[in-house]
Image (cartoon, helix red, strand yellow):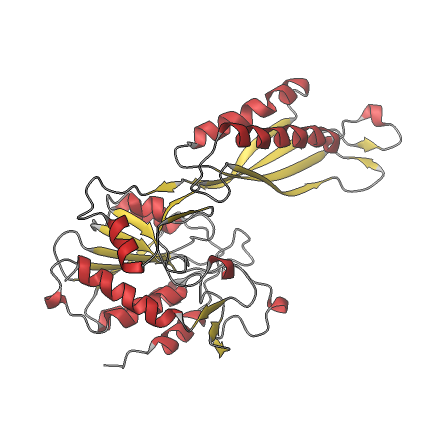
Length: 390
C-alpha cells in the first residue's frame, strides 16, 4: 500500500491539480483529478468512497464531481466539508507559479492553499490515527464542485440527502473563528434596449446609456432605502448591499447607443427572502419601465445563494455553537460573504463555518496559508472528531 503523504506533500499535490471554476468557458475546468486524489487517500484510511457526477454544474467541456467519504457506521456524527475548486488567477500578479506550493517566510503560497484545498490536507492528517472500530458515530468528508460559481455541488448534495450528520463544519478560511451567520447573494443583469442611429440626429434614436443613467440613479436611491429599512448589527456592514459591478453599452462615439447592460450584486441579511429583494428591485424600476415601455428588463445571472444563520440551541449541553466557541477559543461571528453552509444545513444538522487561514487571502494574488495554522487546526479537528465521533 502506498504511503500517505504528510501535510506539505498532500497540500502540494492538491494545489497541482487545476480545478478552476468560472462562468467563462475558457477558464472553467473539471475537478475529477483532485476528487480521485482525495478518494485514493481516504480509501487507504478505511473510508467508504462515493463519487457522484454533479448534473447541473457549469461545464467548460469537463464534468464536475462531488466526493463523500465515510468512516464508521450508524447515524449522526460529524461532516467536514469544503469545495474542491478555485477561482481564476492572473499569473502576472503572482510572485510564483500559482499551481506550485512554495514554502517561504513561514507561509505556503499557492492557488487554493487558503481557499480552500488546504482544509482537505488538514483533514487527511487528522484522520491518520483513526479506525472505523474506534468510532461510535460516523465521520464524513465532503468535497464539492463549483462553489466559486453556482454552488452546484452543494445544491446537489443537499437534494440527495446522502448523509445525515449531527453537525457539520464548512472549512472556509475564518482564522478558526466560528461563523454562524452570513449574507445571501444574488446577481442580476439590467438591460436597456434603445434605438441606435447617427449621433447628429438624436431625436431619431433612443440612447440606452441615458436611460441607464436614470436606472443607476434609482438604484442609488434603493441603496439608501436599504440602509434606512434594514439593519443587523452582527455584521460589520449591517445593511443589505447593492453593488453596480459591471456596465457596457454602445460601440462608437458617433452612434446613438442602442443597448446597455448593467450587472448588479445584491447581498441580503438573514431573514430576507429573494422575493423580497426582487420586489424592491422591481418597484424601484417600475416608474422608469412605465416611462420607457418595453425597454428595461432584468434577468438573473446565476442561481442565488441564500443567507445563513445557525442559532444557539435552547440548552447548551449539545449546542454546536457553544461547543465550537469552547474548542476554538473564539466567540462566534457573522461575515458578509456567502458559503455552502445553508445547503449543508438542509441536511438537518447544526452547521458552522470554521477553517484555517484568513478570508483576506482568498481570491488574491500570492494566496497563502501560514505555517502557524497547522498545529492549531490539527488540534481543533481532533477535538471535534473526539467530541462527535468517538
